[in-house]
Image (cartoon, rainbow, N blue to C red; front, side):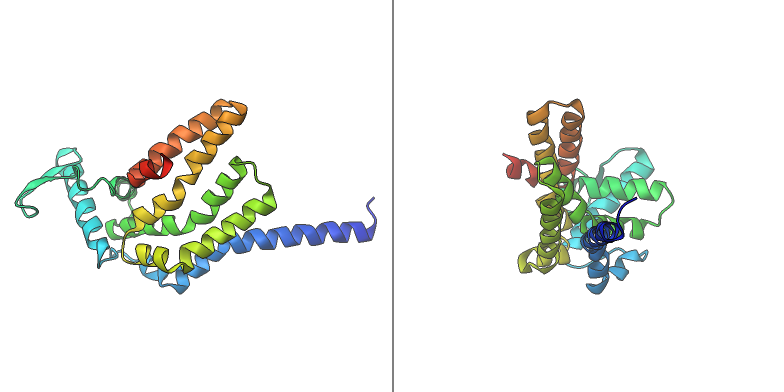
Length: 218
């Protein structure tokens, strides 16, 4: 049996780690609520500024998928008529697919659209932490990096403004690129197929979120 003092120290360390992980991974939920996140849980799509552009693009794609089984339709009310769902929504593909998938599962359309923004807020810590681990950082350093990432996401003036006005996909890609980069680095180091697959899948997902990912990575 372990001495009582040693057991208490182990318990104290475990409690400290649990508290740290709870703050870093659970804290964003409270911060999102503080900054008005409860409005994202309604069946009313977030609107205003760049949100309006993304709503219009997503709604056109959903209309095309429901009516004709394709991701584009000819929109006569925009740019004197053009095929909506092509070219100009390159930064909205993941948002459109996400909304369509959730609506197909029975989630109200407005709420499904908003939950993409919630996802972008809540994945900061997990993505930064996982990426840090892939780069070979220890638990302590990875947790610190994730915590700093959360603070940057919510409290950096520029980044806060970007997601506040609806440029969510742009801000999302601003940290999501770390995952394919970290996975590729890990694959170079150990050549395990799982890391190659992770790099490929996460890179594809990041490009669907925003094509700016390409310019970040190269």
